[in-house]
Length: 312
Image (cartoon, rainbow, N blue to C red; front, side, top):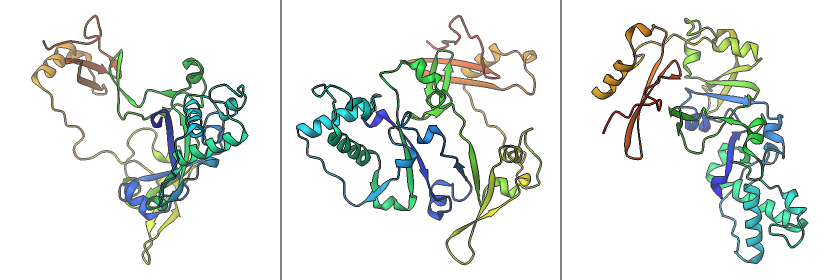
């Protein structure tokens, strides 16, 4: 059942020094502050647990449940909820129907869900975590209906396209939702390279300062307090946030002789310009090795099947 839920983990405190060390790449990273009043975060229609009810509870002991006839019914109800039903839907079922909940049972199921999804060891209390929990897919709704809803639809940016008909997940279980959420605040760690590069040349037409100004972000640098172990925010002018041009090693490519032969055979020098981007992917599926090539994010026609099976 655990794999049927998706969890978005947030924190209330952007100025926790332990969090910066553990999750902020030792103060080289950043923290984004979102406006969580949007339905994506706070609507019961889209979430099993909303941001308003998602405070994580920290404790030293696990909650124990004795598996009997009653708790089996509650676990079955949780399974139905993880598949797309709501507690309200289950309360409207006929009393003898599988999954039916009366008012007392609905309270117990909500507590079981909370214990299952919102409880962590006291060792993690410093995280001050808030979770938004939703289901992976609604078995009672057609996929096109789910994907057409801006609060539910997710795209394939979490996948690597191996060839036109096949994708490989970058991280199994990761879902990248298509809806853009409004950023209110940005905190840059004291070792963040953007802070170190203030006033340097801009890499690209749209730098961070343009986005910060146009989208009205409040931008802070987060510095170490010289007299304590705390971190302190200092509001900074977003006009100074310029991404420096890359220096040092810009690319490093190693390929086999077969891969180089395929690449040279499919891409003629006269077809390329300095601005073009070429991606070669060599992968194995079902014991068979294959290659695909993308030119500027478009797959090159390798054969009638749009890829080349080049090895016996």
